[in-house]
Length: 195
Image (cartoon, rainbow, N blue to C red; front, side, top):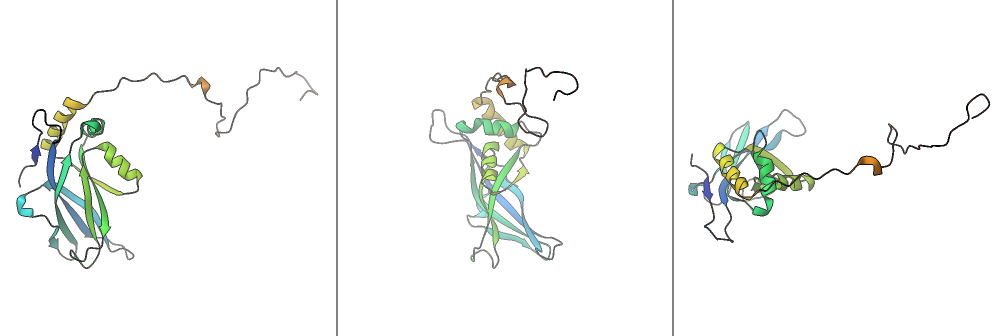
């Protein structure tokens, strides 16, 4: 299998960003469910090869699964999202995130097919898509991609100093059930007959 083609910008080049060329493999697998006999999942993100062409294609089809190759995705790194890459590269398993949607493409198949929309290495991008209710899945990034990403983070990410947390005294008091609590400094009389 080919290596990932990692392109870095030339010195002083403000237009070109570090870019990785990838292809996405989606898998349709049979499941034991009478209402939904099949499900789509992200199978892999692989290095793009010119031999893949530009159009999605069926790689495998049998009674248990289908595999589709979707070539030609660019994974670009943006200096403004260095924090998102930092959050990814500092996890125990850095990964690619892929957003995909079900699409009815008559040119591809008779039934709806899972079609990747974009690929990223940014933790922030993945979070925004999840917040937007998109289907987002992840696969581990190989060591050479993690190293490439780490080099970018080392050059562009600046840790923000921790801010002092404001005292909690300004917050309203609540009882253990979350209801407003009242504190009184008035002394109540003691003894029988006094409520």
